[in-house]
Amino acid sequence: MDLQDKLNQKGLRLTKPRQVVMTILERATVPLSPQAIHQHAIENQADIGLVSVYRTLELLTTMGLVRRVHGQDSCEGYVLASPGHHHHLVCRTCDRAVEFTGTDNLIPLLEQLQHETGFTVDEHLLQLYGLCPDCQN
Image 1: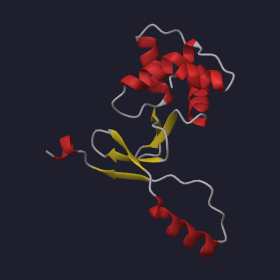
Image 2: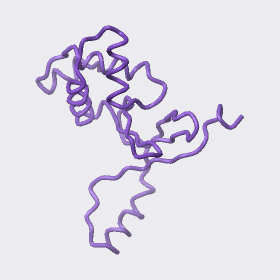
Image 3: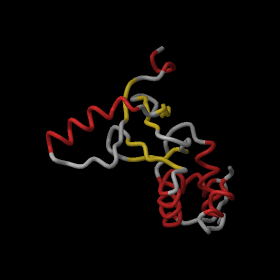
């Protein structure tokens, strides 16, 4: 299903900012901050404002089309999301992010944490850091 169809299902239109942000993320090799997405848009003569980039990212994240990736300095970037539950491996050197499929193996840990703390866990973010194959060489 393409972006147009997904937006139509929610009663939304495919606006220029939405299309520009998705195109930039499709071409990206590393997670991009809203400011970096805005800069790419300007470089490609796409006339969208930074506020539109933030609003678009918020919408696309809510729809599950884009995911946040946190960098070493807590500065988040965004990547396209695959369907289903996923996590990310992030290279400490080049910031490349690779998505991997989530697993049910975390359920016992989450249940233990809920029991020990009294919290009800309804969401989690798992992100691993290391060196990608290229940066290991």
